[in-house]
Each structure stands twice: as structure tokens, then as C-alpha cells.
Length: 505
Image (tube, rainbow, N blue to C red; front, side, top):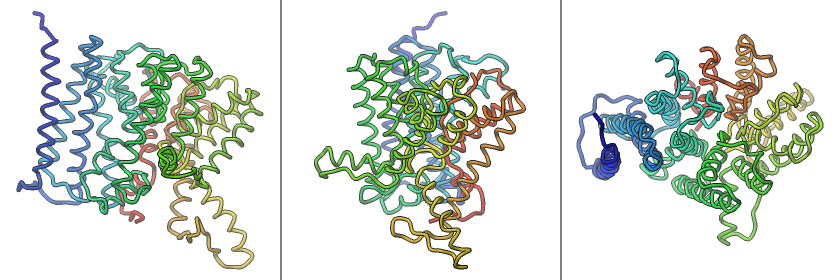
């Protein structure tokens, strides 16, 4: 028996749009409705907010559904629809059962962790429906979870290198990378709250107060990245790329995932220059982008670079010099790779077999240092390295004077608790990378390659010295999943979320 899928697909899309309108109506009327809740606990507002995030995640499937229908990839469209309906159902259920309330820092961290635990699992649905991976159900689920965790965490590691998959699936992954990278879903959630209630939420997400108040800051970040996506896509199309390749390349680079559909080094020089600019932009803090747009709109007469951005640019030059000398690559090629790794993009174009062990170690250091704070990429981050440097330079004064010196950052005294957090975060990044590398050594990696792999995962860079395949054993595969998710959440929020440690206010 044959079914005409055209009206079925139109019906499903209609249902999704109708359900979205219904949820908007419910959202605007929910404050006037008295509801009976199952129980009250500190987890209740977290689950309620998680429900709203799941609903938004469901609607991010809509472009992929339409694109799959346009391409005639009907099985993929059905898989997306099933995934979207699961998101919407679970999200609606949580918002119906639990009350949305203002979150403190600990609850915001819990929300962040739960989101990155649950959403990749639901994103597995289209992969399982399409049978992209073979093997047992457990193998298919684990491989799918690896791919979706890599996408949502913006890491870019993949088990599907050189494997042909539907273009709509590639688009869906690109959208999930973009949304996860700049926190679009969390930004949309911020509009539920008054601005004065968003300080804790912003700290958990790593978005600074850049435009008067947090709500405006969230909106500014959203608008800027939307404009970047459209502008850079248009530029790449004008430079000769087809629409899909241009749009997908921009999504993956601005999200710092780096899992492009083509080898970017095969592009013309003009395109490579644009890609390099995008990577540098993704490594800059959100405040820089506000400065840039204020200048373009003539609200400011000049762009003021922060000390952190200046330090980041200096670090690019130093790392380029060191990497170029060690690997004998030409300066432009060395600079491209350094920017790629420092921004946590991971375009998978480094010739690992040619750069030697010392070249790989330099790349590990670049990844761990990472980009600027309040940016999309992962790692310890430049500002934290700067603070740690000032702390270390003050240590000799303890022995000379017998007193603990006062460390100032930006004219403000650095509190001991803040100093401890910065030191602990950097130490844990390094410790976890080395510990994970030791485990990977038991599965055919040399120690240096294992260190590159582990650092690449926890800094969400996603550049691998080996070609990963679905045959990768369970333990290294599961380990890389955990590293990717912890790297995206960041270590401190993960610790704060489910421990008795009090979060810094």
C-alpha cells in the first residue's frame, strides 16, 4: 500500500505551526491560570524552564523539515518531525506541571547541565529513525549520541567523516551547532524574566552585561549573531560559493564547530580570508561586537579594544611564530591553524602527520589557553590566563615581605575566592585533559595524540589526530562524549550544579 506523503508532510508542518501558536497563547495567558503542581522543590523552576527550552528546541527543527521536504528527503523529514514532537510534548508537559520562577546561580547551572544532558539524547531520534549507524540498538544509540553531543557542544568531532548523509540532516546539525554555540535557546528563555532577575542566569551562561542591562545584552547578542550569519553568508555567496555551502560554513564557524561539508583550504584565497575573519570574530568577547556595531551605526567614533583582546592578538602572533618555526609551515598557513585552534573552531585541516610531536604539543597549549572570555569558544580563556599570570607574579612578594600582596584587575581588588576559582578552573582543565589522555593511551593512541584528542574534546575544538569511526570502542567513545559536554557547560557550572559548593555571586 502506498501513501501520498506530500499532504502528510504538509499536515505535520501545519500541526507544528499550530502547536507553536497555541504555546504562544498559553505563554501569554499562563500567569492568569491557577495550576496544581506536583510538588515544590528547588528543582521545580529548573524543570519548568527546561520545558520551555525543549519547546524552543523542537521548533528549531522546522527549517530542516521544510528543507528535507524541498529536497524530497521524506524519511529525514519524518525523523525530524518525530524528534520535534518529542521535544514539544516533553517541553509542554514540564511547563504544565511546574511553575516558572526566577533562577539563582545554582539553579541556572543545573538548567545548563540538564539541557546539555537531555537535548543531545532527543536529537538522536532522526539518526535512529534513518538508521545512519548500523549495529545493535545500543551501538546505534551511542554513536548517535556521540554525533549529537558533538553538535550541541559545538565540538565538531564526528564518526561520519567521508560518509554521505542527507543534506537536510547536515543542515539540522548545523542549526543545532549554531543554536548551541551562541546560546540562542537560552537567550530566548531570558525574555521570560525581568532584566533585574537575569544576573545569575547571565553568569551561568557566560554572557556579560554589555548594554545597560542583561535583557538588552541578551537581545544584542542574538541580533548581532543573526546579522553576522546573514552578512557572512551573503559575502561567501558573492565570492562564488553555492547557497547551502556558504550558509552551512557560516553556521559551523560562528558556532566554532568547524565541521564543514568541504575542506576549506580548497577554497579561493578570498574565501579563506573571510573564514579567518569569522574565526577571529568568534574568539572575541561579545562586548567587542557591540563596540563594532556601535561604530558602524556611528554611535561611537572609534573602536576601543579591551586589554583581553589585545592580549589575544599578541598570543596569536607568538603562537604563530612558535608553530611556524617548529612545523616549517609558511607563516600564513601557520597563522590560519593557530587562529583555528585558538578560537576552538577545529576545521580538521591540520596535517598532523607533518607537524611532529612538538607541533602537536603547541596546539594542545593553544587549545587549553582558548579564546577571549564571554565568547563562543571553549578553554581556560585569555582573561583567566592573564589573572593567573598576575597571581603568579605576586608570589615572590610573599617571601620578600611576608604579606599576601593585593592583586588588582582593572583597578579592582581581586578577591581570594575569585582567585581560587580561576586557579581551580585552569588546574582542572589541565588535569582532566591529562587524565583522559592516559585512558585513551590504552586504545591505540600515543600519549601526545591522546592529549591532543582529550584537549580537543574538553575545549570543544574538535580537531582529531585520528579518523574516528563507529568502531571506536565504548570507553573512549563515552569518555569523549563526557569531555565534550563538560567542556561546553564549562567545569565550574558543572561542579556548582550538583554539589554543595556555593556558587560565586
